[in-house]
Length: 60
Image 1 (cartoon, rainbow, N blue to C red):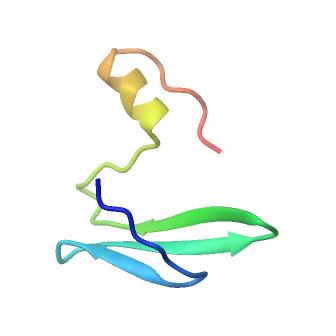
Image 2: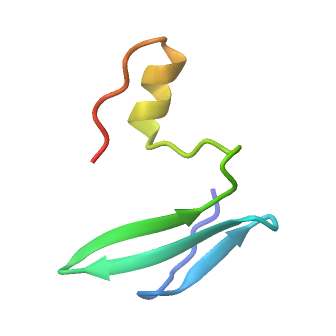
């Protein structure tokens, strides 16, 4: 696993077309993910539910 430190508003790139930006709001850390529509992006628990053939939990 690659671990990178980023400040609020800083980004990393995965390949040429996936950009992940760190956003800190009110002491909470969020990640903004920009990827082509054909690349699915899910939280891990949603991905695992899909793999098991279950209805994924609601996304917030």
